[in-house]
Image 1 (cartoon, rainbow, N blue to C red):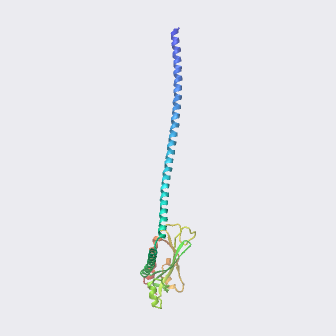
Image 2 (image 1 turned 135 degrees about the vertical axis):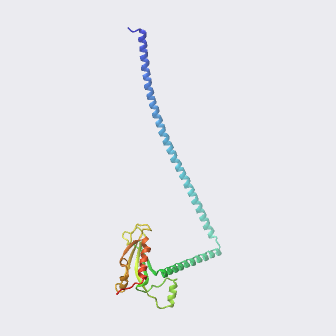
Length: 261
């Protein structure tokens, strides 16, 4: 039989144990609540930092725009001031400016003459005459005459205005005739063409040339016989083969051919 004091002690201990368990449960719930609040605060803090960064970026952009507008305004003011100053320029200064313009025009004429002289030197060194250049169907078409010892007789066209050859031809009524090969070279210059002779959509280095010869069966019979087969028909080749192609053309037109009977 248990002592009454023992019973009271056991009952007291059970009560304390129950209260301890209750306190422990309450503490766990409180901890979970605190953890949740901390998580919410962290999310809000990150959101605030992101908004701050966005505002800072917009502020910087606004500053740059203000600087740009200020620079444009200053340029406009200087331009307006220059126009006003020009309106006040005396007549002597205007005459001087006109003289400068005439000098520049004279310089352009010299440039055109220089270009013609360069073309004539190129013609003398290579025997190649470019008679015309046409832009059509997104291609540049060069009409070419290659002269040489072989080929059919060709009468040169009139030379450009500043040509030294043209000046000599004024003194000589008889025009020289040259054996020649007549052909076109087409080079694509725009990728917008649907069906150009040369492939479109290529880079400058990869653009292709289209070679198209023009023959008269009676006049060019001997020339056709000595030309390689690939020079008697239309062919295409990439730009990096242009030098090799032209070397073949020159060889065919200049090398002495011995016809075996």
